Image (cartoon, rainbow, N blue to C red; front, side, top):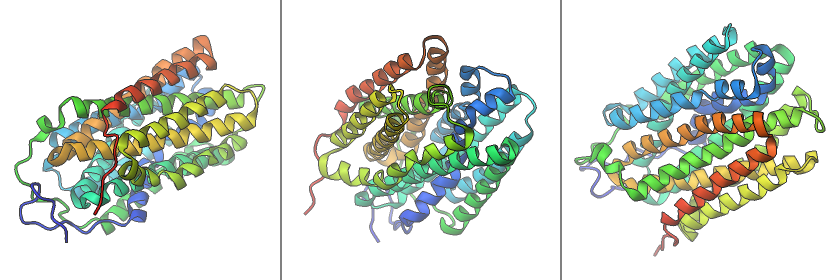
Length: 393
């Protein structure tokens, strides 16, 4: 087995998880995160809330994600990977199930925050585990597989939420997600080796995750989720209002727009290795920008094409940035993963709040301009990424 020089003291790597298992763990971990976005208009009626109010409530999970990621960055080195991931997913089932009976918007919001805390701990520890147990040449692919599971959770989670809510109501949908979280806990327990932590040489801890190069990566993560949530939270209202006027079941079908991302996101790791992380990042950002332009149309086919491109571009960019942050952090990758996710999910919450306010006051076109500015900012920060790929013998 391979040894990571300077990071492991005479301890072989834990066997690398297969790409399918990595993607499935990501899927069950994050299936709750964005699924409720597909039923935002339905929840807005249920709680008598404005688009911005229900958008912030549903995306409050990102606040929990940000706080949980920061805590894991500070204390994650002391947590057994397998035990932490399994416990987080088991606890996650509780707020997921309670959402089915939340009587007020305030309680709904609080439960979403708790969900985020649980998801974040599992998410961050899994990223740290992948960084620690994957050989350097396999890390980009491992992270891309995890992001692919994230993409799949966006598609399937939204479909389940929209179809189940349309047929049986939102309460049943949230119970289904609680069951899926429990399945994720079982999968992690069955596939991650016990004691899946490496004996590392002295780690720089949180201090090793600081510095201009890593801060640029954190900023890119912030802006990517700012853009993603800004689009996929409020486009639902655009789709259901005239002139498009989709119903709940049709809205669920629209989220097959994430299918291309499931197929193409795994290529981000190979693209970053061959052409350089900066170029791979720019490909994702340019694709997402084209998608924003299409979203300004009032033709359903063009709007759907825009959603496809925004999803594909942002996930491709995220997979590239995640892998680059982990590689740059070296032995501090656990802390760096936590800080990256803190910034990433903080961007999601702020995106939900700011874009929602702009949507209420100025409309969809103004939202698209704001989101385009965020992606442009990510492109500027991407200048810090290497422009060349890795040469192999």
